[in-house]
Length: 150
Image 1 (tube, rainbow, N blue to C red):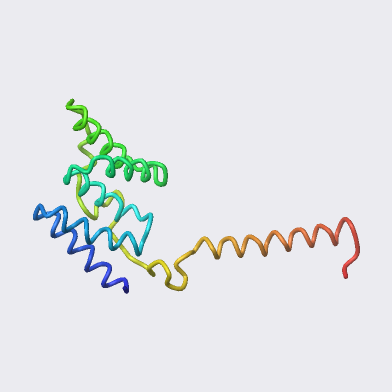
Image 2: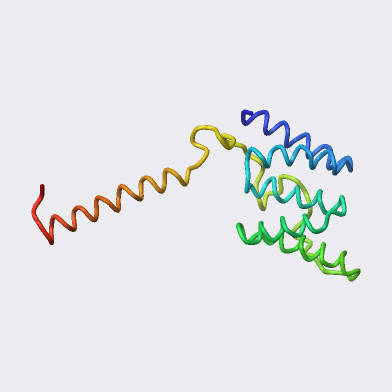
């Protein structure tokens, strides 16, 4: 799936969400999540859909994951709202964190290569470059302080 197809799928999920079809929206978001795991722009709307479908345990798990990964205030507020609904008590949620897709606070959904596509793991490049740098530093240290080259 290319980035335009992913963007279209996200827009379809947004449209269904706005129409109140949370199950249909969730299906599309889960397809995106399979291709782009751990993306807050997908995780957050998924949690909202799960909450609206009264799948509270799954929504709470997703909120906890977003809080751990991104320290996302919106996820904390959503979690508080879910806990309030489960407990039957009112929980105050910040009005600066409306529940909408493509919120500027988390950015719009922009999709790069899907999982399994070449270059989908930028951390792999970071590890490789770090290994090269560390090896070079160790070799230089050895050559300068402990021995002769060769």
